[in-house]
Amino acid sequence: MIGDNNENSNSSINNTDQVTQAPEQVYEEILFEIENQKTQQKSWLTNVLILVFSLLIFFQLGLFEFGLNGVFMIIVVLFIHETGHLLGMRMFGYRNVQMFFIPFFGAAVSGESRNVAAYKEAIVSLLGPLPGIIIGCTLMIMFAATGQEDYIKSANMFLFINIFNLLPFYPLDGGRFLYIVLFSRSRYLELCFRIFAALALILVGYALSAWLLALLGLINLWGVRIPFKLTKAAKEVCQSQMIRDSPVGIDNAGLGSEIPPLSIAKIIIDKTYEYFPPPLNISIIARYTKQIWERITFRPGGIFSTVALLIIYLLAFCIPLAALIGSVIVSSMERTGFLDTKLVEYQRPDGSKGLKEQVYFHGKLDLETEVDPQTYLYHGREIGYFDANTISWEGVWSHGRHNGEWKAYNKQEELIQVTVYDKGNFVSRKVKVDNQWVEKKLEDLPFILKWRLRREQKKPSGPAAKQR
Image (cartoon, rainbow, N blue to C red):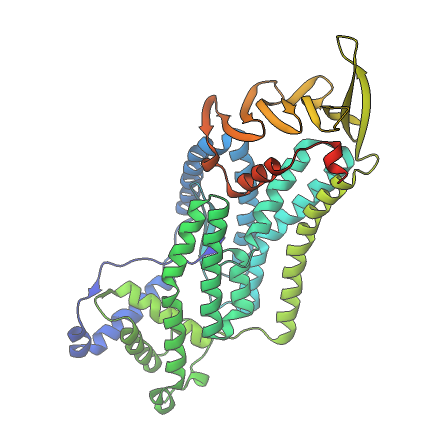
């Protein structure tokens, strides 16, 4: 995710009289503040300290939810993602570029553009997800070739975070990209897009029980009126009679300039006060004035660059998504050499014959589950394996439904999760995070996991159920 960096000032305008009594002074103050925001630079040491400090906070607070290995993997993925943005910003001449981590949420790179062309801003939005997607697809290929679970876990992390960032939700990278390429061309398109993106974030946050995403969606929904006003103000400035009568018209104003000429700046500042009446901080007025000028001078890309960028976006989004879906399809097809399922007879300790379903992954025994010979439903013990000598999980089926305690282990054979069922009904789950047990009820689980549990409760499982 990328963002814009703005500084605050302590000076303020208290009322409209100040603007009326000393307009020239106010204009000069605001233009000086715009220039000040443009020229302010942070030292490389400040940027490094901000990155290290925020990274430490993210690392420490993230331990509670993800554990040490999970937090480390997330940090690696986010660092690569944001480094792509950072390099793109550096390449295209952004100012005040810095990276920072946000506790419980993610990471961001901030910077200020120097009248960067629209297609370059769009490329910066894509340069974050693309490296991670390439790495994720490579890891998935390595997993298919070797069967090593570490590869698929890392691939899933890289692909999930980067595909998620390409979703068309503002302010995610995909949302920023589509705004720059498509929706910036009309204020009504922009308004509809921002409302849709905000509502989508709220729904996704609710579905995943990710309340920070839902909160971000609510904040975006509340804030849609500001960019709409700014775009409307920019259009009115362009169409105003004062601009037509101005000795320096818009077309001759030097659209490459970051600061509007004084005659046009006065018109923009007056329009800013019309839409955002005092009292307001001088820095906020300066920021809005600059943003109106940026909208006036913004020129969307041509038809060829727009089509080319949209093709790149669709490929970057669809190819890794297809890879994830393809891996699920391949698993469900149970292809020989990748996933092979067998029903085998075995002799119980009492001498009677039993039936087991054995699943082999890349030729290695991955899972075996006892089956009722009469109903062909899972009934009895199930064991999952890391390898021939190490158990991954174990539990008991009762007539095709989970029952009792289901235990999960790490590769060091330590118990890390216990899920309790009562004849298929979920009761509770305890998860071990950094040597502490955290208990979760059904209402504490993400929406998708709740949906899966309810789906499993509807019908019993087993070879007979698979054949229906």
